[in-house]
Amino acid sequence: MNKKAQVKMFESIAVLIIFFFLLSFGFTFYGKMQKISNEKKIRKSMDIDAVSLAIKASNLPELQCSTKNVAEPNCYDELKLVAFRQMLQNKEGNNFLTDHYYQLFGFSTIKLHIIYPVEKYEIMLYDRPRTNETESAGILTLLPISIFNPKTNMHKFGYLNVTYYPSQ
Amino acid sequence: MRNKKGAIEIQFNWIFILIVGAIILVFFLTIINKQKTIAEDQISSSIKINLGAILTGARAATSTASRINIPDIDIIFDCDGYIVGKANAIRSKHSFSPDLIKGPVIISWTKDWYMPYRVTNFLYVTTPFVRYIFIKDANGVVEEIYNTFPNRTIIDQGESKAFFTKDLIDVKEVANIKDLNHYKVRFIFAGSIDPETAEFTLPNLGGVKRKDYTAVKISATSYDDLEGVGELIFYEKAGDYFRETDRTVYLGEASAFGAIFADKAETYNCNMQRALNTLQIVNSIYLDRTGRLYDNSFSLSDGCDSPYLGAKGNMQEINSSIPWIRIGNTPALTINSLIYSKIYSKASRIKGWNEQALKLSCPAIY
Image 1: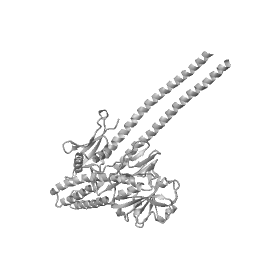
Image 2: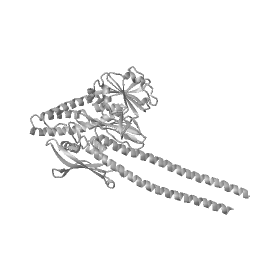
Image 3: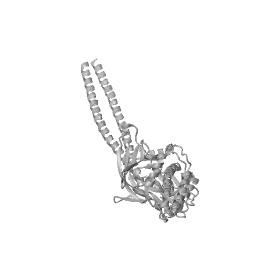
Image 4: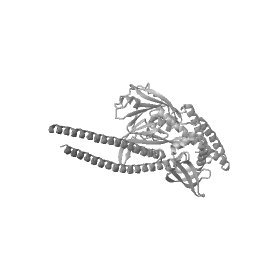
């Protein structure tokens, strides 16, 4: 009788072991699927952030052209560009400016490439990549942009190169 | 003896089932709890990402209003931005909103802030579940504000949908306002009406709590006054009447509109301080730009130099009126009408110089 009870008990324990084994197998599989789906979601959110950043950069009132106070989309005023660069170059020690643009652009680099009608050249507008090398892979967004010079009343053509560095 | 053994065996089986059952139950409860937390975090972060993108898009499109469907969730708004669940705040500079926005629909509206050039876009976010009651004044200021605000309904895919919940009523009709199940009600006064002493009794609107039953009075006596500097008085319901809670100042139409959306003077001031920071940056850029136009003016038609020189001086004075401010937990600058009046007076002069530059066919200052 003792033996019978022992067998019964082993049976129950074996059923439980198999049950928990199948359960843990199921959860591992579910976890892996969740991980893949989360990675996709994270990637999507990074892409959204990158596009948002490009929109912000191309619509900066500090740089945007305006005619009779109406902002022109995808256009930078060349004189504002020069002033903006100068302001950022002189910002050493001005924590407010550093904070202001960090809150706006975070870890990113924004470069303006001018390609027509002059010889190609680029202007760095904002440069704050992540310092950690493992996290340095950025998401690139390119936006066409025209550059208007109010002194000469001439337009140049270029593109905005916005690289967003998300946290991994 | 056999019976006794059997009884022990049966009892042991029950204890065994009880322990194993409890383990399984605890195991599943832990998993359900974890999944619940994960799902909530996922919803919060997904809303955060989408809302952030929507707000960026809304900000880029000037003077537009849109109706956005979101999950039925509460969004808290304060000086740090929009907070959804446990996710970090969505930082949105120059935004004006009630302190609590309830889903599943939000309304966004943007308006440019000029001083006199475009400084930034003010973003107003609310929901159709907040009711705005505009009280007519003798000079028609409130009526004009009412007409400038977005429509009550919007046609979306051929269907009429609730948009901006607004009513324009006479002060005598206040006592007859019916409860329409909104969670917040905001009254807008202007001109000579004093909400504290006005002869009306506030109706009891069922679900609206005292702190959500608020009013703002804009000191303007004509719509043109909104372009300048004026006083804003914030009120909260106390018994059957309104009681003043705070006072602050507006600078320009877009700023006055901000006070209609922000139900707390503290959040309003915080956003205005940020707007002043942006004004300082944009003004510095225009100052440099005007300087370059001035340097170039001698090669242009006669007289171009004087508007640039005049505008430069006023821009320098705007910059000196606003100290560099660091927005932290304790704002460094107290918003006051003196600073605003100085900025507005200089901005008006810059506007005049710009008009003169245009008359002389010189490149525009802004």
